[in-house]
Image (cartoon, rainbow, N blue to C red; front, side, top):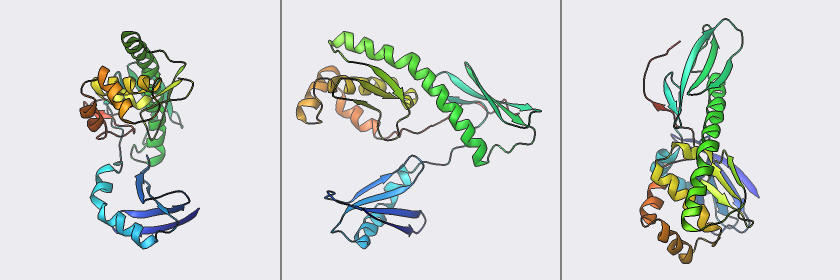
Amino acid sequence: MSVKTVNLDGLGPVHLHKRRGVKAIRLSISRTGEIRLSLPFWSSYASAMAFATDHIQWITDHRPKNITFAAGARIGRRHRLVYQSSANSTIKTRLDSPDIIIKLPRGTDLETPAVQKIVDNVCIRALKAEAKLDLPGRLAELAQKYGFTYGAVSIKRLTGRWGSCDSKQNITLNCYLQQLPDNLVSYVLLHELVHTRLMAHGKPFWDELKRYDPQVMLHRTQIKQHQPVLRPTIVSSELVY
C-alpha cells in the first residue's frame, strides 16, 4: 500500500491510499472528519485529487460538524446533559437517568477539546445503556412477528454501519440507532434479520426485506441522510453551571 497526504484548499489534508485490488476511486470520510481516497495502483494521485475537487460539496455536506455539548442537550431518547460546578480539581461524570451529570471544576472552559472528549465518552455510555434496554427487545418482537431466528445480540459503537449479522446469525447493533426515528430503527433491525437468511445484498435480499418493510427503498434512501456519530439535540438553554 502506498500512502500520500495532500492539502485541499478549504478542506485541509486528504489522505490518498493506493491499494491492490481496488478497481475505482473511492471517497470516504471518517467519524472524526478525515478525508480519505482509496485508489487503484495504476491511478495517479492527480486524478484522485481531481475527483476530490469535483466532490467538494459532497465532502462539505457529509463531513461531521464540530459539536458542542451544551447544557440541557438531549442525548438519545432519555438522557439530557446537566453541568454542575464543583470544588474538585478534576472532572467527574455520572449517569443518573434521565440526567448525565458532568461536575466541572470552577472556571472550566466547556469548549476545550479535552472537556468535550470527556463529555463525548459519557454520552456514548448513556447511548449504549439506552440501546441495551431498547434494541434487543425490539429485535425480538420483530423476529417473533415474522418468524426469524438469530444468535446472540450485541450493542457496540460502530462508525461505518448501523448493524451487522455474521455467518452464525449473531447480530450487532449500533448504539447510535437511539438517535434515529422509529421507522428507520425498524428498517435496520429488519435488515439484519433478513441477513440471517440471505447474506448478500442482491435482488433476492431486497425483495425479501420488502415483504416486511414495504417502504424499504424509501427508508434505504432516508437512512443515508444520517451518520453514525453523536448528535446532541438542543432542547433548552437552561442548567448552565
